[in-house]
Length: 102
Image 1 (tube, one colour):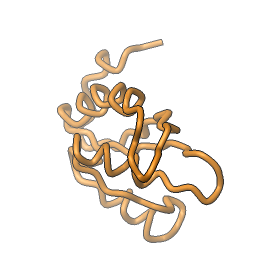
Image 2 (cartoon, one colour):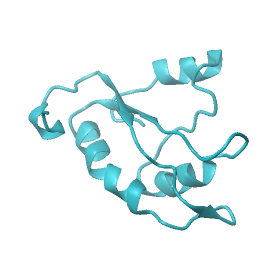
Image 3 (tube, one colour):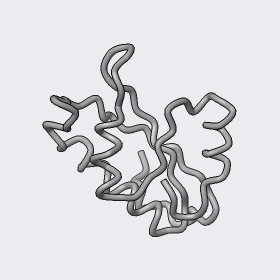
């Protein structure tokens, strides 16, 4: 398997990154940030090389929100939160990502 650092040409490309951010959240706060923090170097590498990133993760059980995870991540790297990527608005947001946006 190739390493992400072997890829140099992200110019103008949207990269789908599957992250495992099903982390423990208590009282609306991420308790263990290790999984989120582990993905940041990959995301930063893509952004630094002029790509945009679409993050994909599942979270908990039906009805639970991953917004607390987004809010933690957004403090590290500014990002757009898309509740439903399959809705018209969600697809539009993804299609309108600019270079170096998440």
